[in-house]
Image (cartoon, rainbow, N blue to C red; front, side):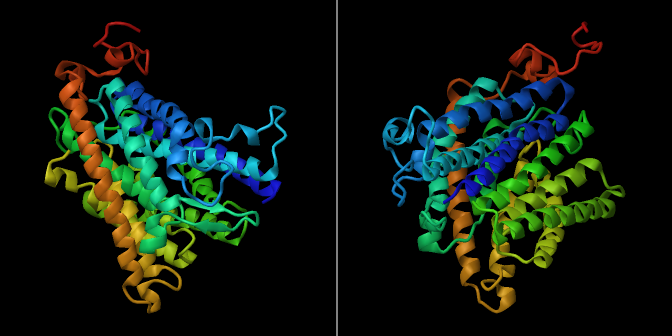
Length: 421
């Protein structure tokens, strides 16, 4: 371990941290003007709460029992052994890396929770959301993170061990397609079902109020995703370079295939569709970015754009209101990307004559995390809904929840509903 690796990871932490505000912009542009503050606050609230919970006990939960004893496991207050930290800040190289690694994993935790909020846009109480976020992170994200990511890094920088889905099942997931994408997508489906549909739910009921804001959010998310994926290698080496390149080509190809899908089905490609395609492609390449060649990564993007664009139509068929298509993009995209390793993965996939073994391992990982996340999220959301209430009052929902929940409007131009500037 050396200071170059630490600096590389510090840079990645800053980039990944920017993804949650980017998500706030992406989601904020998609909702009504009278709900933009509430929508963005749900992302920022999750960032604040989950970051602190992660350092308080989440990191210790996720990485307990691994080979590294410097910062992993419950070892002193908030998982940090105070004997290892000098008040002068003169940390050893190894401990410095461990602290930054904890921050890196914390940014993953924060955005995973924030992703769920898109499923209940326009109708959720902020306080109830924060309670859900804290409980879900504690009972679901922290444990399932350990199921996959519970590895350590030895003094030479080699990854040691892994969670039970990796060691015992054989799951391959480089940067969190199961933990982050399937976990958040399954939880989003459960919460959307519990909270219920918006009044007047139908296709095209609300147009995005600010498309440029959504495009800015997509750009920030894509920017951070390079560090999300390449940074998971924990070193600036050849594997990180492959992950970096694949994070370029898969979202790019998914953008094109999503636009083509819209051209075929509705006659016009949309800016929101192209932005959604980029995010769907980034989702799909997250677990597989180090296991696919760039050519197969492009194929994955083309497939993902079509599949996810089609999947978001299912909410109208099945009658659940996933407001901002978290299920169609993150759950479906995460499943496609995770399973793609068993099909296109170098030296392990069906395309290389390696049989169904790896595909089976990938499917087990998807099912284990997806079912656990869905079940736990449904239970948590149901308890909140039946006690303090998860959903705002009907009149507040109709009028727009920003002034009710936060006492603010996102925009201060003349608005006849509020009679003020």
